[in-house]
Length: 117
Image (cartoon, rainbow, N blue to C red; front, side, top):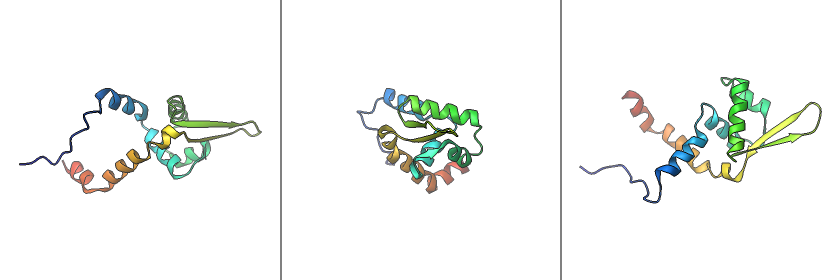
């Protein structure tokens, strides 16, 4: 029988994969990225409403981590009341094909088969 699995590119090292996963791992990071792909910039309050299961503290932590990794840009407006907007950096925007592939996989029969065991 032939294998239906594609081989991972030889130039792709496990270190690169581990680094990429370390940047996007986190309970809410992929959802934050999804919402910023759909509409950016987004105010913190918009993200909070879009991801109601995330606590405010956790959402702030995940946004700060994405910002420190150069994936998300935070823009502060000096005004009253305070206003902060988040958008994707070019590095964050480059994740779009990977997120689209994950979306396509989730919408496919593969996810249903995996859930059935």
